[in-house]
Image 1 (cartoon, helix red, strand yellow):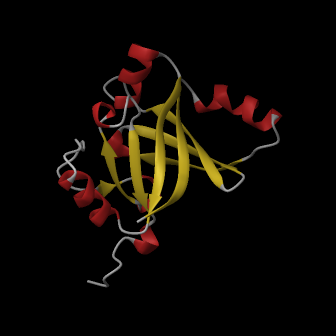
Image 2 (tube, helix red, strand yellow):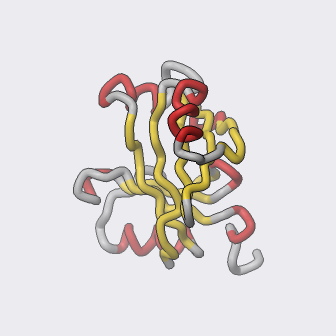
Amino acid sequence: MIRGVDHIGIAVRSIDEARPLYEALGLEIERIEEVPQEGVRVAFIRCGGTHLELLEAMGPDSPIAKHIDKRGPGIHHLCLGSDDVRSDDQRLRDAGLQVLRPEPTLGAGGAEVQFVHPKSTGGILLELSQPAAESDPHGS
């Protein structure tokens, strides 16, 4: 079940170059993490009850590098928090929506994630994310 907005992903050319804007707003980067399987460095910034995630490509073949080449820096995706991403994934498939992966995969912070294709969401890349501590609600 969806719990609310988890974060907004923002594609940036460089976390170091983007950082001063957010710091000028009084926001702080909590941590920076590399997610090699996605080819991205992620800076996590708490903003009220949600997070902003600055996404920096780790190489030219990264999906973020391709996004920036095509569309420029800016909002990349909206992420909704889930308490059972596998059930939500199946519900989307049953509704005929197009997801990007055969099954949820591991993302930043060890969260289990699935993405919904913009063709199924009115043009928004939508991510569903279940925190690592909750990634197996059935205890198996």
